[in-house]
Image 1 (cartoon, each protein chain N blue to C red):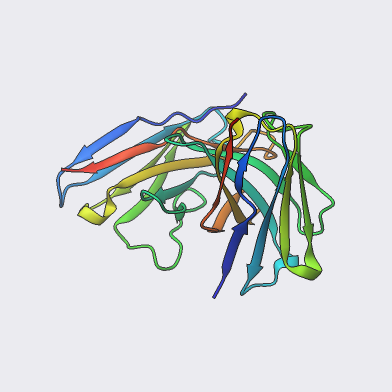
Image 2 (cartoon, rainbow over the protein chains, first blue to last red):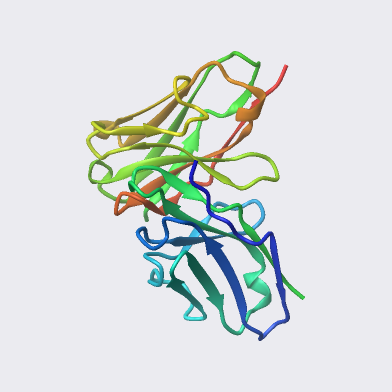
Length: 108
Length: 118
C-alpha cells in the first residue's frame, strides 16, 4: 500500500524556522495537504494543494513541493505552533486518502 | 457557523456493532463529499471511508472493508458509519470530515470515541 513518510519529530527555538518534510512516490502527481493537531483537538487544515493557505491560517505557514518530497515551513515559530503535523495526499489513482505518520513539532 | 458533530461512540465488546452519526450544519451538506477518519490512542490519523455527495460512490480502507458501512441522509444533513465485527484495533477517536476537491478535508468534527474491549 502507498505510504507517506515524515520525520517523527522536529525541534526548533521560538522565532526560528521549522521545516517538516513528507515523502511519497505519488507526490509528483498528487497534491499534498497539511494538518495541525494539538492535544485533545481535531486536526486543522493549514495548507492545501501543496502551497495554498486557507483563510485564517497565519502567513508564517507555507508549503512547497519538489519531486517526491513536499515541505511544510513555519517561519518565526511561536510557542502556540507546538503540535503534531500530518501530511496527506492520495494514491496515484487519486482514489484513496493517505496520511503520513505525523511529525511532533517541539518549540524549545 | 459550519459545524460537524459526531455521536454514537462508546464501549463495545469484540465482535459487537456500533453506529456512528455525524450531524452537519452551516453549509449545504448535500453538495459535499464526506470522509470518516480515525485515530487510535497515541497514534496517527487513518482514513476510514469516503462517500460522494449523492452517496453513489463509496470507498473503504482495507482495514475496515467488509465490516464497516458508510451512508448518508441528505434530507437529515447526516452522515453515518455502521461498524460491525468490531475488533480491539478499531479502538479510536472517529472524526467525520467535510471533503473538498475529492481528496482533502477542510472541516472536521470534534470526534467520538469508540472503545472495543471485553
